[in-house]
Length: 339
Ligand code: GYE
Image 1 (cartoon, rainbow, N blue to C red):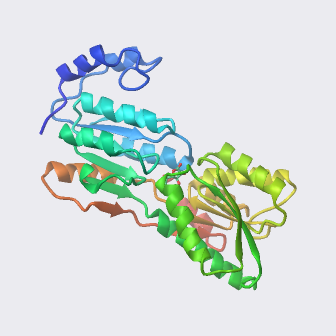
Image 2 (cartoon, protein in one colour):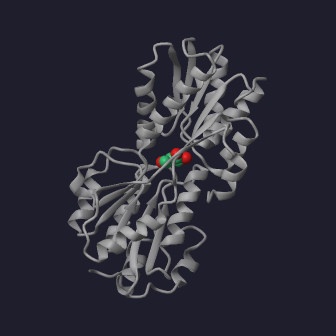
């Protein structure tokens, strides 16, 4: 097993990093980073290309990885924030290859466009672990994937809505739905959209008026909801493909003089189940949230250690997930939430 040596690091710093927007030398922190102690020879060096910092979920995911891949636990983590741009992820992965890290970890922003760079990693003999979102890359180009079943999340949301409408005596009514989608082409968006559509296919009375991306951000959710409210009358349901877009949607709904949640004008569904969403649900603004668990750090650390020990891992490792709705004891649930 190769290890990241001080010589390689210094060579990389000298040759490749001058003026780059990624890597060791970042604006305003070059001096600090360069004077950091070199990784000890026995640490496992992991380069992690994170999507960005677009949502509460993402922040919790970053904290989880940073907390698990510490020097105390035997890791040296090189963290790169791609600021929601695939080109930055491609650059980061190539820099990891040049730095001869031991493992490359990627949360791929979208599903497509990874074959060439993953082939380069494979040719360099560096194992790649994918986390969070999936890709359509050939399976032999990565070692394993750890994340959520986004399609199952979407189906869970559709099934919850069907049961809820039935209970409300609205099972046969025309139901006018809009969806605020996540980053287009991300497996989180594709899976949640398709999962919900699978359930919708069984309900002829559900009418999807429009779907538009809010890019998983609060500002995006707010803008898209504003357009929906200007364009369509009588929206019964808003499906927000993450919590932060739901927060933005709630603002727009209020601004339009409407209400949402169990006692409101509009049924609001969301995905992730971050603390602020459960609090918003407790305050009566959201009907249900479909959990997506960002706490992947310890699974990732375990996977790397298992690979170090020569174990062969399952190609796909799904994290268990549930849902929460306004009828539950949210006070108690909030006490147990880690994110
Ligand atoms: O739902 C969203 C984040 O890929 C599951 O990305 C993740 C999604 C999550 O921005 O909040």
